[in-house]
Length: 167
Image (tube, rainbow, N blue to C red):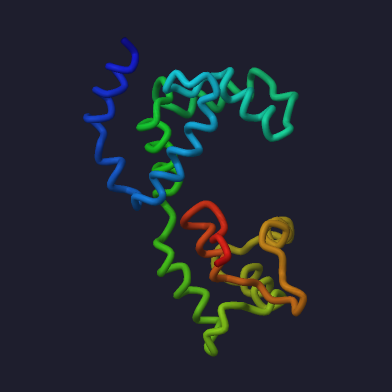
């Protein structure tokens, strides 16, 4: 009977599907399927533990898993999973808005910014970044050999959650 209940929830909150492009929904569905280790249509504590084990993290505590599950309003079916991502991404500006902000510092339109300049601006303007936050960003998005940050890729990852595949 749980799948019937999940269907009912799905129709009640189908507007969650309008929050994402079809390609994004497909990517979330693939991620959900990978995480739903026992293929019952729900992500539970054992699925989370197995997912962590699959990526090499074997010592995940019960408290940590319980905290993750508490973020959901109930059993985590695909619709709830998608809603949770929607809530996490709700405050994120559209990709074009973020790109336009970076383009202010890139009048030539190269798609990259000098690492030392972006560090200066992020640490001295508006919501100032800490040194640790800058280091974390450069760890996740390393500068190229010339010391430049590929802000177009950074914007894509912020809004889509993964790097563009290189064609």
